Length: 482
Image 1: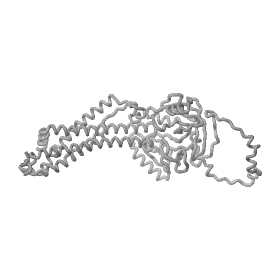
Image 2: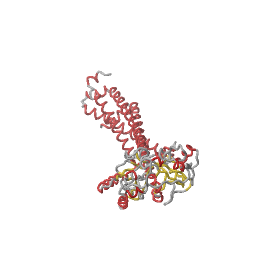
Image 3: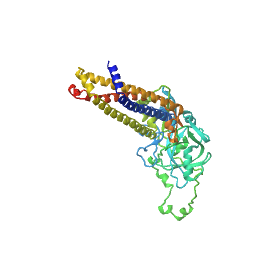
Image 4: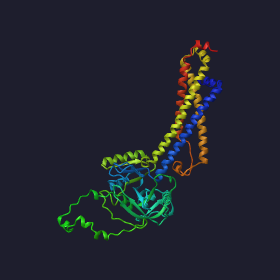
């Protein structure tokens, strides 16, 4: 009976029904389409990073927050270029991961920074990833070589990203190609180190090439020579008297005499000429075999969050200063920027929903006031306040439900059309969010459930305040209303 009465009332007030229904359709439509777009953007971003940069999970030193794009600091030990700590218990870790039922494959990474020594005023920084080429390129298969070739195992060399090469050539008016030697400086807690390596290739990713920090691939031995922490500053060596006696008596005046200074020669260093400095002794846990991260690819069906918690618990149980983290933590700061964008867009969708509810409430309250005579007569004929409240609720719910269904159908049709046509990325920086050069959106479960929740919220608040007005209408007032 209530449903038939509600439908009769909605048809009786067609104009207001269409106005209110139109506002509900607009609000739910924008929420449904907007949420679906944001969900697909999040999925594309996650796939871009897991397929090309981070893997499903990353393992790092527990005492230093870091990811594949570096660290916010070096643990407070020095200023300058952050230096990541090599992983402790590495051999035990690798043996444990090889036996883990959820791990499909893994690769090791040594993350560091360097400055290309191209001219006397070089000031650019390079994000450098020390890799074992065969292992890394089989783990990440989206590397596209545009010039030269890939690094080979046991080879000293550098692979530059195409945008990094372009920037260096523009900034310093030089030509960098496969076969060119380039010097790389590193300083900080490690001290000043300079290494010369040949550029063996220029590469790009299938998507996600426009970033603030873009990694460049360096052979692992050169990476260790550049980035490992020296132990010289921490060692105190006591020489016996027999050893110091061989030095003889030497004074400061002798050290800076004209004879010694006159023997000194100065030469101009070619920045592209090979240059090797003595290798410093590394601290315990570094040197040969040291890595800063291990990246994991999980087997299909494994839950990354659950595996992350299990690994971190296993590390703590064994007393290893290690921690597992997901792709979002490993892709900082890019992932935070994406989250900020999603929050802003979600806030806009929520704002539109709130405005729709407020407008609907005002319209429904006005509609109730216009129906004073009708509602008062119903009260005079014996209708209880609860009956009036239920009747208005059914009217509101039916109207909102029908409008929500229309909005979801329209939104699904629009998303299906966009999926077929595709939305071209207007800028390369958006390719990571679009999942490629063309974005193909589609409906999502979260968009549907979000729309249904929004429908219930609109129905409830749009009913609540008008019904509070309706139940206050007395039969006496209704009789005095024309």
